[in-house]
Amino acid sequence: RRVLRLATGAVETVPLEAYVAAVLPAEIGGNAPAAALEAQAVAARSYAVARTDRHAEQGADLCDGVHCQVYEGLARSTAATRRAAEATRGLVLVQKGRVIAAPFHAVCGGRTARPSSVWDDEETPDLTPVDDDACLDAPGARWSFFLPRAQFPALAARLGFPGARFFEVFSHGDDGRVSTLRLVAPGGLSRAVRAFDFRARASEAWGWSSVRSTAFEVAERPAGWLFEGRGTGHGAGLCQAGAIARARRGESRAQILGHYYVGTGTASIDAAGAPE
Image 1 (cartoon, rainbow, N blue to C red):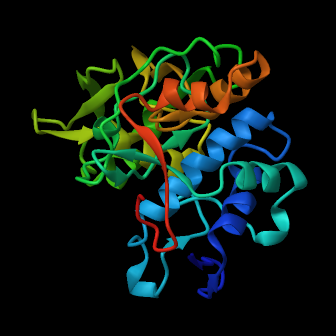
Image 2: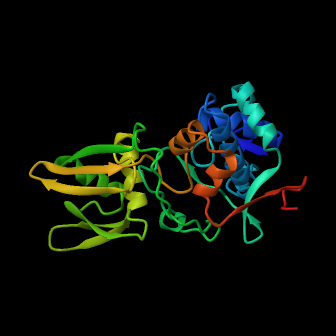
Image 3: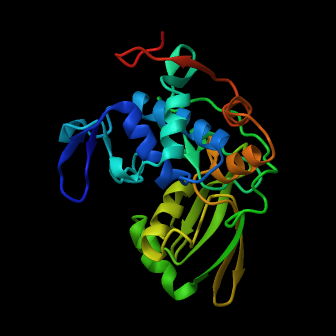
């Protein structure tokens, strides 16, 4: 795969399996249990095979950041991640005869998200949200964040509606997560924004540990708004904290993948990257 190094603009071409082994430490941790590493390897390989168009204008398939998958160079692979890549060599997740861009995230907080609720993309796989008790004790499974009233206009400006002075939850998806919020300006003018975008702009302003996910409730206070939520990340697909916990209690790679990617199967790929 051709990997765009964002810091330099250089494009590094690396063998697929070596790339997978190098991605695992930054994504799930090099010391995760074998079954969790193997499940992550299948997901990472699937994503790399399915999404080769994200940086076509720069002459690359993928970048090395969170926009695609975090890749910090081949030297980041470990003996354990190389074993995981080798144990799953060529295996990808497929749905309706196509390799899927398998999503994954840090902590779902008890229930995963529907990918179509996160991304408006026809290439998004159709995954059913599932309950997950395995990650409930993980850091980030429960969180809170206070947004001072004085800081909200800056967030509203990032969302393209600088006149807004307050907001409210407008709708939820069938996965229980907030799907849209309504920003309101003086005089009653309002605008609906996607919860994914709201979270992304909040993360740009105050860091990823502010609004950690779209699974939250909001209570208005005189000085601002209190968010109380669950999970860290977009919530779709494999929950990395859950996969680690499941591996530690004895679940296999197949069981982990079967839990988080309902409606998919695994297949081998040939040298061209197509399902056999």
